[in-house]
Image (cartoon, rainbow, N blue to C red; front, top):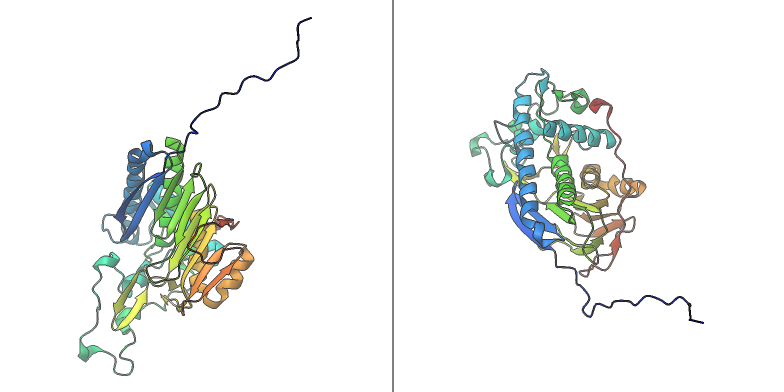
Length: 359
């Protein structure tokens, strides 16, 4: 009888294993920082770059407080009257209000006026080195303290101004005298959006970094997304590896700085005082499942100062804090600083609850 024993099918062996192509990248300047785009499919780089550039242009037209023709500038001039806005700005205001509610107002989108009064009234690259008063007009008792012009009117606001913003679909009402500054959340949310759009439209893994805000989407390259973590040369450095969909954000008190009447100021304001937060931490870096969530936490950590470590620990958010003296503190499994990115970083579970004002 013939042998009917099942036999395994022959296996075709590829004599040369197919190697995943090296990711391709592009880098350019935007918003006084660096934008970086990495895609796992090199053939998609040009189209991915166009997608990101278009998104950045739309956000700039909607949310730049340094442009007279932007939507936020028109809202500031509306005198408290409701205005219809683009879907882009409505989305950016919505996430900003969510961040404010989730941090008890530590991340406040209504600090455009105080920032301008302190001298940050244009692109940071255009601010003069030292906008000091003439010597005869400086305060004699505290010559290195900001003069009245830098702080006048900043203490008269009553209660959190962000709670008085209303967002109903595409209609927004900003109280008279309030200027929005969406920088804390808009850049991070835009990184999330850009990475997702590139991955969804082009079917490639994508990493988008806007300054210290980094988002990923789609399948990562072999070995994951390896990220070097350092705010600037000379600062403590480390590296981590992000899995698919991981995101990082770094908030800093040493990046966007300027001099005003002899004092060095930075752009992270404490909403309670409308002055730069005391520099307990030079930088805070956090990991989450979205760049928006990570940036919300790291910005709030700078405002919270010495309370940041306990707060981040309670959130379960992996984070790395560089103190004013350069000492590094890590929480929730953030790996020790090592220039070799061998540690996989578990992203944090920070959940943002939608604010009542944005409903």
